[in-house]
Length: 136
Image (cartoon, rainbow, N blue to C red):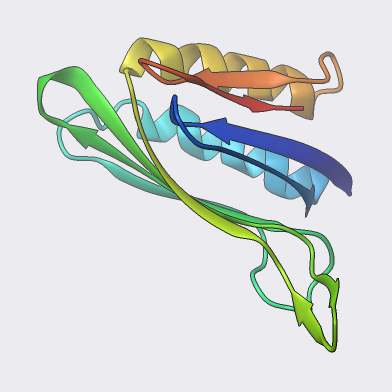
C-alpha cells in the first residue's frame, strides 16, 4: 500500500487530498492508461483511487478521462478528503474540477506514473492545458 498526495488545479480552484493505493492497483492503472491512450476517438477511462465515504480510510479520487474532438482530453475530477470531526459530525471536504489536457501530456504522465509505481520516482504530473495536476 502506498499513500499518494493528489493536487488538482483548474487555474482558479485547487484541491489536495491523500489516498491509499495498493501497489498492484497502481501498476494496473499504468497498464490501463497505456491502453486508453490509443483510444483517441471518443475513448473513456475511469480512474479511481480510494473510496468515498466515512467508512474508508484516507481520501478518494475519481477521474473520468474522455477523448474529445480535435485531440483534446477532458478530465472530470471528483475528490474527497479524509473524514474528520466537525462539532458533533464527521465530515469530509470535497471538490469537483474540470480540466482539459492533450494526448501528448497523457503520455508523459503515464511514463512518470510508471516510474512512481516502479519506485524510481516519488511524483508524477498530469499537466492540463492551462494548469498542472500533480501526484506525489
